[in-house]
Amino acid sequence: MVGFSDYYVDLRDPAAHQLMLSRLDDLGIFTFAVPTPKARQELLQLASKLGKIYPHTHSDADGVTVILPTEEITDLPGLLGFSRHTLDLHTDCTAVPRPPDLIVNHCAQAAIEGGETLLVDMKDVYEELLHSWPGVAQDLSGPGSMIFGFGKGRYAGSVFEHVGNNRVVCRFRADGAGFSDVRIGTSMQILMDLLGRFCVKLKLESGQGYVINNGRWLHGRSSFVGHREFMRILVTANDPEVPSYRIIRGFDLSYRASGSARDGVRRDSDAINLAREANGSRAEQR
Ligand SMILES: O=C(O)CCC(=O)C(=O)O
Ligand SMILES: [Fe+2]
Image 1: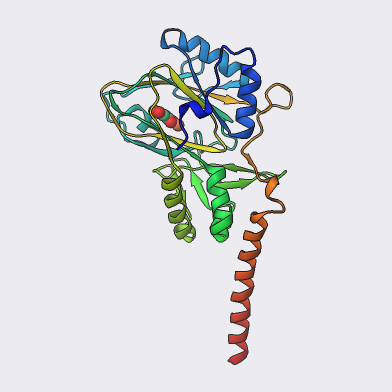
Image 2: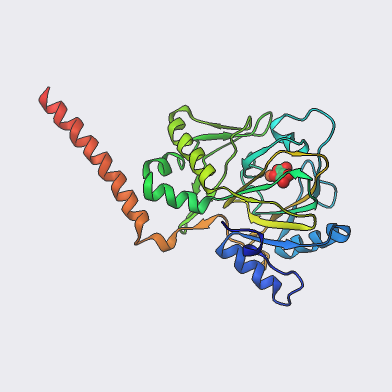
């Protein structure tokens, strides 16, 4: 099982910036540590090196959202983060057409019990689907097969979106702000099972953090007791006008062009052809 140290980048390393970018390109994630007292400034610096800070309804003016449990009842989908409840695996900002590319999440104070970070690399999930459930991969890529958001802002999209150049961007939440078309119910169930199988748990200590590609990794956290404090900064990291902000959206499937992905698709179309043939021969019999 991979852990914090597998993805770690030492921010004091002279080559840290290069390392962060290559980790994000290859893995879509890196972990880091910043001591809590000066963390806010350092996180803002880190985020600014990667892209443009993306303001959020819940963030302060500098773009930092402080995530701690409030005493109010916050079981609304968008507010569950500010409670002690489990926060199921999700993409941030699913209801906008173009969610931020990166999430910087820093554990300012770890919970005494619980509050583990949950992560899933959707590239692995997608590859597993292509290999074993190609029809499910197709269902989950159907434009408009999911509606994200509640209240005013809504976005009709899909769990996997093919954005050209062999890249796929994921977008997911399965709470009261993510609704799937009933026709893909079985495929959603298979996806949920895979999310359980591919989920990585990290127990971040105070001062530790992670950066993920929001179009590749889902994140969440387990429930906790007592106090726990996180800081989050969202980042737009793909801007043709700023060449240094060059994180490419989502994940790459190009290396599969001659591999099992094709096999998977072939198997799927074979299945469709077989079904057609069966229907045809039945029609002939009538
Ligand atoms: O509390 C955490 O670890 C993550 C919170 C989060 O993902 C959110 O509020 O969107
Ligand atoms: Fe989140």
